[in-house]
Length: 469
Image 1 (cartoon, rainbow, N blue to C red):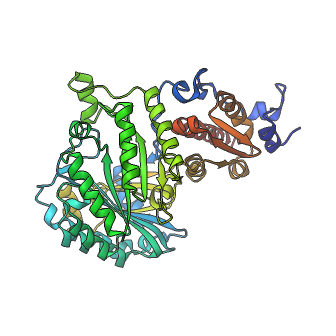
Image 2 (image 1 turned 180 degrees about the vertical axis):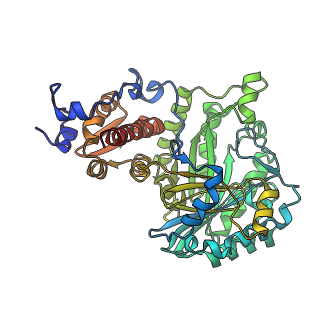
Image 3 (image 1 turned 90 degrees about the vertical axis):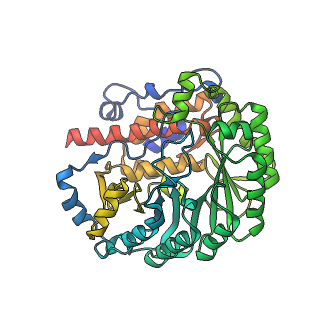
Protein backbone atom coordinates (compact mmCIF):
# COMPACT_ATOMS: atom_id res chain seq x y z
CA UNK A 1 0.00 0.00 0.00
CA UNK A 2 1.31 3.45 -0.89
CA UNK A 3 2.06 5.83 1.95
CA UNK A 4 -0.02 9.02 2.21
CA UNK A 5 3.04 10.97 1.05
CA UNK A 6 3.41 8.77 -2.05
CA UNK A 7 -0.29 9.01 -2.87
CA UNK A 8 -0.04 12.79 -2.55
CA UNK A 9 2.97 12.98 -4.84
CA UNK A 10 1.57 10.69 -7.53
CA UNK A 11 -2.05 11.79 -7.38
CA UNK A 12 -3.22 8.19 -6.76
CA UNK A 13 -5.44 6.70 -4.11
CA UNK A 14 -5.81 3.32 -2.45
CA UNK A 15 -8.43 1.32 -4.32
CA UNK A 16 -11.13 -1.00 -3.08
CA UNK A 17 -13.98 -0.65 -0.56
CA UNK A 18 -11.98 -2.41 2.16
CA UNK A 19 -9.01 -0.06 1.95
CA UNK A 20 -8.34 1.53 5.36
CA UNK A 21 -8.02 4.93 3.69
CA UNK A 22 -11.46 4.58 2.08
CA UNK A 23 -13.19 3.06 5.09
CA UNK A 24 -11.71 5.33 7.72
CA UNK A 25 -11.41 8.59 5.83
CA UNK A 26 -14.55 8.80 3.72
CA UNK A 27 -15.24 12.47 3.12
CA UNK A 28 -17.03 14.01 0.18
CA UNK A 29 -14.91 16.82 -1.27
CA UNK A 30 -17.20 17.49 -4.23
CA UNK A 31 -18.89 20.60 -2.74
CA UNK A 32 -15.46 22.24 -2.95
CA UNK A 33 -14.68 21.18 -6.52
CA UNK A 34 -13.92 23.90 -9.05
CA UNK A 35 -16.28 24.31 -11.96
CA UNK A 36 -15.08 23.55 -15.51
CA UNK A 37 -14.08 26.49 -17.66
CA UNK A 38 -11.79 29.47 -17.11
CA UNK A 39 -10.07 28.88 -13.72
CA UNK A 40 -9.47 32.57 -13.09
CA UNK A 41 -12.98 33.86 -13.80
CA UNK A 42 -15.27 30.85 -13.38
CA UNK A 43 -13.78 28.37 -10.89
CA UNK A 44 -16.49 29.02 -8.29
CA UNK A 45 -19.81 30.83 -8.14
CA UNK A 46 -18.34 33.30 -5.65
CA UNK A 47 -15.48 33.86 -3.24
CA UNK A 48 -16.20 32.26 0.12
CA UNK A 49 -15.79 34.40 3.24
CA UNK A 50 -12.90 33.23 5.38
CA UNK A 51 -13.72 33.41 9.10
CA UNK A 52 -10.83 31.83 11.04
CA UNK A 53 -12.70 31.67 14.34
CA UNK A 54 -15.76 29.95 12.85
CA UNK A 55 -16.69 26.84 14.77
CA UNK A 56 -15.42 27.91 18.17
CA UNK A 57 -17.43 27.02 21.25
CA UNK A 58 -18.72 30.15 23.05
CA UNK A 59 -18.28 30.36 26.80
CA UNK A 60 -21.59 30.93 28.60
CA UNK A 61 -22.05 34.44 29.97
CA UNK A 62 -22.20 33.19 33.56
CA UNK A 63 -18.87 31.40 33.15
CA UNK A 64 -17.05 34.16 31.32
CA UNK A 65 -15.47 35.83 34.35
CA UNK A 66 -14.29 32.60 35.99
CA UNK A 67 -12.93 31.21 32.71
CA UNK A 68 -10.99 34.37 32.02
CA UNK A 69 -9.64 34.39 35.59
CA UNK A 70 -8.02 31.05 34.80
CA UNK A 71 -6.82 32.01 31.33
CA UNK A 72 -5.21 35.29 32.30
CA UNK A 73 -2.83 33.48 34.66
CA UNK A 74 -1.61 31.23 31.83
CA UNK A 75 1.74 32.58 30.71
CA UNK A 76 2.43 32.81 27.01
CA UNK A 77 5.02 30.32 25.80
CA UNK A 78 5.31 31.47 22.17
CA UNK A 79 5.80 34.71 20.33
CA UNK A 80 2.67 36.69 19.53
CA UNK A 81 1.40 39.93 18.03
CA UNK A 82 -0.56 42.72 19.72
CA UNK A 83 -3.45 44.91 18.60
CA UNK A 84 -4.84 48.21 19.93
CA UNK A 85 -8.26 49.32 18.69
CA UNK A 86 -9.36 52.95 18.29
CA UNK A 87 -13.13 52.95 17.54
CA UNK A 88 -13.71 56.46 16.14
CA UNK A 89 -14.28 57.58 12.55
CA UNK A 90 -15.04 60.95 10.96
CA UNK A 91 -17.62 59.23 8.75
CA UNK A 92 -18.97 55.82 7.81
CA UNK A 93 -17.29 54.57 4.64
CA UNK A 94 -19.96 52.80 2.63
CA UNK A 95 -17.94 49.58 2.16
CA UNK A 96 -16.99 49.21 5.85
CA UNK A 97 -18.66 47.02 8.46
CA UNK A 98 -16.54 48.19 11.41
CA UNK A 99 -17.95 51.68 12.05
CA UNK A 100 -19.08 52.25 15.66
CA UNK A 101 -18.52 55.81 16.91
CA UNK A 102 -18.24 59.22 15.28
CA UNK A 103 -15.22 61.44 15.79
CA UNK A 104 -17.33 63.75 17.98
CA UNK A 105 -18.03 61.05 20.59
CA UNK A 106 -17.46 62.45 24.12
CA UNK A 107 -15.11 59.60 25.04
CA UNK A 108 -12.66 60.37 22.25
CA UNK A 109 -10.63 62.92 24.22
CA UNK A 110 -9.97 60.54 27.12
CA UNK A 111 -9.96 57.24 25.24
CA UNK A 112 -6.18 56.92 25.17
CA UNK A 113 -6.09 57.07 28.99
CA UNK A 114 -8.64 54.25 29.23
CA UNK A 115 -6.62 51.96 26.97
CA UNK A 116 -3.46 52.83 28.88
CA UNK A 117 -5.26 51.75 32.08
CA UNK A 118 -6.22 48.48 30.37
CA UNK A 119 -2.58 47.97 29.38
CA UNK A 120 -1.51 48.42 33.03
CA UNK A 121 -3.96 45.98 34.63
CA UNK A 122 -1.94 43.92 37.12
CA UNK A 123 -4.33 40.98 36.80
CA UNK A 124 -3.33 40.63 33.13
CA UNK A 125 0.43 40.62 33.70
CA UNK A 126 0.92 36.98 32.61
CA UNK A 127 -0.85 37.77 29.34
CA UNK A 128 1.43 40.71 28.62
CA UNK A 129 4.66 38.98 29.59
CA UNK A 130 6.31 36.01 27.90
CA UNK A 131 8.25 35.66 24.64
CA UNK A 132 8.76 38.74 22.47
CA UNK A 133 5.86 40.27 20.57
CA UNK A 134 6.73 40.44 16.89
CA UNK A 135 4.37 43.20 15.80
CA UNK A 136 2.10 45.84 17.33
CA UNK A 137 -0.81 47.19 15.30
CA UNK A 138 -2.92 50.30 16.00
CA UNK A 139 -6.14 49.92 14.02
CA UNK A 140 -9.74 50.96 13.99
CA UNK A 141 -11.86 52.74 13.32
CA UNK A 142 -9.36 55.45 12.64
CA UNK A 143 -6.49 55.83 15.13
CA UNK A 144 -5.50 59.19 13.65
CA UNK A 145 -8.82 60.64 14.85
CA UNK A 146 -7.08 60.98 18.22
CA UNK A 147 -5.09 64.14 18.89
CA UNK A 148 -1.35 63.90 18.25
CA UNK A 149 -0.41 64.05 21.94
CA UNK A 150 -3.00 61.40 22.90
CA UNK A 151 -1.92 59.09 20.11
CA UNK A 152 1.77 59.48 20.94
CA UNK A 153 1.01 58.79 24.61
CA UNK A 154 -0.92 55.62 23.73
CA UNK A 155 1.89 54.38 21.48
CA UNK A 156 4.46 55.04 24.19
CA UNK A 157 2.39 53.25 26.85
CA UNK A 158 1.94 50.17 24.66
CA UNK A 159 5.67 50.03 23.97
CA UNK A 160 6.41 50.34 27.70
CA UNK A 161 3.93 47.68 28.81
CA UNK A 162 4.46 45.03 26.12
CA UNK A 163 7.58 42.87 25.64
CA UNK A 164 8.23 43.92 22.06
CA UNK A 165 10.95 42.16 20.11
CA UNK A 166 13.94 44.18 18.97
CA UNK A 167 12.91 45.77 15.70
CA UNK A 168 9.24 44.85 16.19
CA UNK A 169 6.98 46.18 13.45
CA UNK A 170 4.72 48.93 14.86
CA UNK A 171 1.92 49.86 12.45
CA UNK A 172 -0.48 52.80 12.58
CA UNK A 173 -3.57 53.02 10.38
CA UNK A 174 -4.15 56.53 9.05
CA UNK A 175 -6.57 58.54 6.94
CA UNK A 176 -6.13 61.88 5.21
CA UNK A 177 -9.08 63.47 7.04
CA UNK A 178 -8.19 65.06 10.39
CA UNK A 179 -4.57 64.06 9.93
CA UNK A 180 -1.42 65.77 8.77
CA UNK A 181 2.21 64.87 8.44
CA UNK A 182 3.06 66.61 11.71
CA UNK A 183 0.72 64.27 13.60
CA UNK A 184 2.32 61.28 11.90
CA UNK A 185 5.78 62.67 12.63
CA UNK A 186 4.86 62.68 16.35
CA UNK A 187 3.73 59.06 16.05
CA UNK A 188 6.98 58.07 14.36
CA UNK A 189 8.89 59.82 17.14
CA UNK A 190 6.84 57.70 19.60
CA UNK A 191 7.95 54.49 17.87
CA UNK A 192 5.74 53.83 14.82
CA UNK A 193 7.73 52.15 12.04
CA UNK A 194 4.96 51.53 9.51
CA UNK A 195 1.99 53.67 8.40
CA UNK A 196 -0.94 52.10 6.55
CA UNK A 197 -3.26 54.40 4.60
CA UNK A 198 -6.57 53.12 3.24
CA UNK A 199 -6.60 54.68 -0.22
CA UNK A 200 -9.10 52.23 -1.83
CA UNK A 201 -8.92 54.21 -5.10
CA UNK A 202 -7.18 57.33 -6.36
CA UNK A 203 -10.17 58.21 -8.54
CA UNK A 204 -12.10 61.12 -6.98
CA UNK A 205 -15.54 59.99 -8.17
CA UNK A 206 -15.00 56.42 -6.95
CA UNK A 207 -13.70 57.72 -3.61
CA UNK A 208 -16.68 60.02 -3.09
CA UNK A 209 -19.00 57.10 -3.78
CA UNK A 210 -17.33 55.25 -0.91
CA UNK A 211 -17.79 58.13 1.53
CA UNK A 212 -14.16 59.25 1.26
CA UNK A 213 -14.08 63.05 1.33
CA UNK A 214 -10.53 63.80 0.13
CA UNK A 215 -10.19 64.17 -3.62
CA UNK A 216 -7.35 62.68 -5.62
CA UNK A 217 -5.22 65.84 -5.56
CA UNK A 218 -5.45 66.19 -1.77
CA UNK A 219 -4.78 62.49 -1.25
CA UNK A 220 -1.71 62.41 -3.48
CA UNK A 221 -0.26 65.54 -1.89
CA UNK A 222 -0.65 63.96 1.56
CA UNK A 223 0.90 60.64 0.51
CA UNK A 224 3.77 62.31 -1.33
CA UNK A 225 4.64 64.39 1.73
CA UNK A 226 4.38 61.33 3.95
CA UNK A 227 6.54 59.33 1.56
CA UNK A 228 9.12 62.09 1.78
CA UNK A 229 9.59 61.55 5.52
CA UNK A 230 11.36 58.24 4.78
CA UNK A 231 11.30 57.39 8.49
CA UNK A 232 8.56 54.78 8.40
CA UNK A 233 7.39 52.28 5.80
CA UNK A 234 4.39 53.59 3.87
CA UNK A 235 1.73 51.03 2.93
CA UNK A 236 -1.51 51.69 1.05
CA UNK A 237 -4.66 49.65 0.43
CA UNK A 238 -6.38 49.48 -2.95
CA UNK A 239 -9.74 47.78 -3.47
CA UNK A 240 -10.67 46.24 -6.82
CA UNK A 241 -14.22 45.82 -8.08
CA UNK A 242 -15.64 49.04 -6.61
CA UNK A 243 -18.78 50.66 -8.09
CA UNK A 244 -17.74 52.94 -10.93
CA UNK A 245 -14.24 51.47 -11.06
CA UNK A 246 -13.80 50.29 -14.63
CA UNK A 247 -10.75 48.37 -15.76
CA UNK A 248 -9.33 51.65 -17.08
CA UNK A 249 -9.80 53.28 -13.65
CA UNK A 250 -8.17 50.26 -12.01
CA UNK A 251 -5.16 50.47 -14.33
CA UNK A 252 -4.80 54.16 -13.49
CA UNK A 253 -4.95 53.28 -9.78
CA UNK A 254 -2.12 50.82 -10.30
CA UNK A 255 -0.04 53.28 -12.33
CA UNK A 256 -0.52 55.97 -9.68
CA UNK A 257 0.64 53.49 -7.05
CA UNK A 258 3.76 52.73 -9.11
CA UNK A 259 4.50 56.44 -9.52
CA UNK A 260 4.06 57.05 -5.77
CA UNK A 261 6.08 53.90 -4.95
CA UNK A 262 5.05 53.21 -1.38
CA UNK A 263 6.89 50.43 0.45
CA UNK A 264 3.89 48.14 0.24
CA UNK A 265 0.41 47.84 -1.26
CA UNK A 266 -2.57 45.55 -0.65
CA UNK A 267 -4.86 44.63 -3.53
CA UNK A 268 -8.16 43.62 -1.94
CA UNK A 269 -11.20 42.38 -3.84
CA UNK A 270 -14.42 44.12 -2.77
CA UNK A 271 -16.56 41.90 -0.56
CA UNK A 272 -20.06 43.16 0.15
CA UNK A 273 -22.02 41.98 3.18
CA UNK A 274 -25.67 42.81 3.98
CA UNK A 275 -24.66 44.90 7.00
CA UNK A 276 -22.61 47.49 5.10
CA UNK A 277 -24.18 50.61 3.54
CA UNK A 278 -22.74 49.94 0.08
CA UNK A 279 -24.55 46.59 -0.11
CA UNK A 280 -27.85 48.32 0.65
CA UNK A 281 -27.11 51.09 -1.85
CA UNK A 282 -26.46 48.56 -4.60
CA UNK A 283 -29.62 46.65 -3.65
CA UNK A 284 -31.70 49.85 -3.86
CA UNK A 285 -30.07 50.88 -7.12
CA UNK A 286 -28.84 54.19 -5.70
CA UNK A 287 -25.28 53.53 -6.87
CA UNK A 288 -23.62 51.62 -9.67
CA UNK A 289 -23.26 47.88 -9.05
CA UNK A 290 -19.95 46.46 -7.95
CA UNK A 291 -17.94 44.49 -10.49
CA UNK A 292 -18.95 40.83 -11.03
CA UNK A 293 -16.56 38.27 -9.63
CA UNK A 294 -15.15 37.46 -13.07
CA UNK A 295 -14.22 41.10 -13.63
CA UNK A 296 -12.68 41.22 -10.15
CA UNK A 297 -10.58 38.21 -11.13
CA UNK A 298 -9.34 40.03 -14.24
CA UNK A 299 -8.51 43.07 -12.11
CA UNK A 300 -6.59 40.93 -9.63
CA UNK A 301 -4.54 39.25 -12.37
CA UNK A 302 -3.85 42.66 -13.94
CA UNK A 303 -2.67 43.95 -10.57
CA UNK A 304 -0.36 40.99 -9.96
CA UNK A 305 1.16 41.22 -13.45
CA UNK A 306 1.58 45.02 -13.27
CA UNK A 307 3.39 44.93 -9.93
CA UNK A 308 5.56 41.96 -10.88
CA UNK A 309 6.69 43.69 -14.08
CA UNK A 310 7.66 46.70 -11.96
CA UNK A 311 9.84 44.50 -9.73
CA UNK A 312 7.57 44.27 -6.68
CA UNK A 313 7.67 41.13 -4.52
CA UNK A 314 4.43 39.34 -3.71
CA UNK A 315 4.53 38.53 0.01
CA UNK A 316 0.99 37.16 0.35
CA UNK A 317 -2.09 36.74 -1.80
CA UNK A 318 -2.97 40.44 -1.56
CA UNK A 319 0.21 42.10 -0.33
CA UNK A 320 3.18 43.33 -2.36
CA UNK A 321 6.42 45.03 -1.32
CA UNK A 322 8.63 47.40 -3.28
CA UNK A 323 11.36 47.67 -0.62
CA UNK A 324 13.02 45.32 1.88
CA UNK A 325 11.78 47.28 4.89
CA UNK A 326 8.18 46.27 4.18
CA UNK A 327 7.69 42.93 5.96
CA UNK A 328 3.91 42.82 6.59
CA UNK A 329 4.57 40.95 9.85
CA UNK A 330 1.32 41.59 11.72
CA UNK A 331 -1.03 40.60 8.91
CA UNK A 332 0.97 37.51 8.00
CA UNK A 333 1.20 36.29 11.57
CA UNK A 334 -2.47 36.92 12.30
CA UNK A 335 -3.51 34.86 9.28
CA UNK A 336 -1.13 32.11 10.39
CA UNK A 337 -3.10 31.84 13.64
CA UNK A 338 -0.58 33.13 16.19
CA UNK A 339 -1.93 34.53 19.44
CA UNK A 340 -2.92 38.19 19.43
CA UNK A 341 -3.03 40.22 22.64
CA UNK A 342 -5.77 42.79 22.13
CA UNK A 343 -6.66 46.05 23.86
CA UNK A 344 -9.31 48.72 23.34
CA UNK A 345 -13.10 48.80 23.02
CA UNK A 346 -14.20 46.30 20.36
CA UNK A 347 -10.78 44.68 19.88
CA UNK A 348 -10.53 40.95 19.27
CA UNK A 349 -7.70 38.70 20.43
CA UNK A 350 -6.64 35.13 21.15
CA UNK A 351 -4.85 33.47 24.05
CA UNK A 352 -4.28 29.93 25.32
CA UNK A 353 -6.67 28.28 22.89
CA UNK A 354 -9.45 30.85 23.30
CA UNK A 355 -10.60 33.88 21.30
CA UNK A 356 -12.02 36.94 23.01
CA UNK A 357 -13.66 40.27 22.23
CA UNK A 358 -13.30 43.38 24.37
CA UNK A 359 -16.55 45.20 25.24
CA UNK A 360 -17.36 47.52 22.29
CA UNK A 361 -19.74 49.83 24.15
CA UNK A 362 -17.60 52.72 25.37
CA UNK A 363 -19.68 53.38 28.48
CA UNK A 364 -19.49 49.78 29.65
CA UNK A 365 -15.83 49.59 28.66
CA UNK A 366 -14.96 52.60 30.83
CA UNK A 367 -17.11 51.52 33.78
CA UNK A 368 -15.55 48.04 33.86
CA UNK A 369 -12.02 49.43 33.67
CA UNK A 370 -12.70 51.78 36.57
CA UNK A 371 -13.49 48.69 38.65
CA UNK A 372 -10.05 47.35 37.72
CA UNK A 373 -11.48 44.54 35.59
CA UNK A 374 -10.88 43.50 31.99
CA UNK A 375 -13.99 44.51 30.00
CA UNK A 376 -14.64 41.25 28.12
CA UNK A 377 -17.76 40.92 25.98
CA UNK A 378 -17.28 37.42 24.53
CA UNK A 379 -15.02 34.44 25.00
CA UNK A 380 -14.91 31.24 22.95
CA UNK A 381 -12.84 28.07 22.91
CA UNK A 382 -11.06 27.77 19.58
CA UNK A 383 -11.48 24.63 17.50
CA UNK A 384 -8.91 21.94 18.43
CA UNK A 385 -7.36 22.13 14.96
CA UNK A 386 -6.82 25.90 14.93
CA UNK A 387 -3.02 25.65 14.82
CA UNK A 388 -2.90 23.40 11.78
CA UNK A 389 -5.65 25.45 10.15
CA UNK A 390 -3.41 28.48 10.62
CA UNK A 391 -0.63 26.56 8.89
CA UNK A 392 -2.95 25.98 5.92
CA UNK A 393 -4.03 29.62 5.72
CA UNK A 394 -0.44 30.84 6.01
CA UNK A 395 0.84 28.46 3.34
CA UNK A 396 -1.85 29.32 0.79
CA UNK A 397 -1.45 33.02 1.60
CA UNK A 398 2.30 32.93 1.01
CA UNK A 399 2.10 30.82 -2.14
CA UNK A 400 3.34 27.39 -0.99
CA UNK A 401 1.68 25.02 1.46
CA UNK A 402 3.68 22.14 2.96
CA UNK A 403 1.27 19.29 3.69
CA UNK A 404 3.73 17.21 5.72
CA UNK A 405 3.01 18.91 9.09
CA UNK A 406 -0.73 18.34 8.57
CA UNK A 407 -0.23 14.68 7.77
CA UNK A 408 2.04 14.28 10.79
CA UNK A 409 -0.84 15.48 12.99
CA UNK A 410 -3.63 13.73 11.08
CA UNK A 411 -2.39 10.61 9.30
CA UNK A 412 -5.57 10.38 7.25
CA UNK A 413 -5.45 13.89 5.85
CA UNK A 414 -3.63 13.09 2.61
CA UNK A 415 -6.07 10.30 1.81
CA UNK A 416 -9.06 12.57 2.40
CA UNK A 417 -7.61 15.58 0.58
CA UNK A 418 -6.18 13.79 -2.47
CA UNK A 419 -9.30 13.89 -4.67
CA UNK A 420 -9.85 17.55 -3.88
CA UNK A 421 -6.26 18.56 -4.55
CA UNK A 422 -6.14 16.59 -7.77
CA UNK A 423 -9.39 18.18 -8.98
CA UNK A 424 -8.00 21.65 -8.23
CA UNK A 425 -4.78 20.77 -10.06
CA UNK A 426 -6.65 19.67 -13.17
CA UNK A 427 -8.82 22.78 -12.96
CA UNK A 428 -5.72 25.01 -13.01
CA UNK A 429 -5.93 26.34 -9.45
CA UNK A 430 -2.86 24.69 -7.94
CA UNK A 431 0.39 22.96 -8.79
CA UNK A 432 1.57 19.91 -6.83
CA UNK A 433 5.15 18.94 -6.11
CA UNK A 434 5.59 16.07 -3.68
CA UNK A 435 4.06 17.17 -0.38
CA UNK A 436 3.71 20.82 -1.33
CA UNK A 437 0.89 22.72 -2.98
CA UNK A 438 1.32 26.07 -4.74
CA UNK A 439 -1.68 28.10 -5.92
CA UNK A 440 -1.58 29.56 -9.42
CA UNK A 441 -2.66 33.18 -10.00
CA UNK A 442 -6.20 31.84 -10.40
CA UNK A 443 -5.82 29.86 -7.17
CA UNK A 444 -4.57 32.93 -5.34
CA UNK A 445 -7.62 34.88 -6.43
CA UNK A 446 -9.85 32.06 -5.14
CA UNK A 447 -7.66 31.42 -2.10
CA UNK A 448 -10.49 31.73 0.46
CA UNK A 449 -12.30 28.87 -1.32
CA UNK A 450 -9.13 26.76 -1.25
CA UNK A 451 -8.48 27.45 2.42
CA UNK A 452 -12.05 26.73 3.51
CA UNK A 453 -12.07 23.48 1.54
CA UNK A 454 -8.86 22.27 3.19
CA UNK A 455 -10.06 23.39 6.63
CA UNK A 456 -13.26 21.39 6.18
CA UNK A 457 -11.10 18.40 5.23
CA UNK A 458 -9.07 18.82 8.42
CA UNK A 459 -12.17 19.14 10.58
CA UNK A 460 -13.68 16.05 8.96
CA UNK A 461 -10.73 14.09 10.32
CA UNK A 462 -11.17 15.62 13.77
CA UNK A 463 -14.86 14.70 13.76
CA UNK A 464 -14.13 11.10 12.81
CA UNK A 465 -11.47 10.84 15.49
CA UNK A 466 -13.96 12.08 18.03
CA UNK A 467 -16.63 9.64 16.83
CA UNK A 468 -14.24 6.70 17.09
CA UNK A 469 -12.90 7.57 20.53
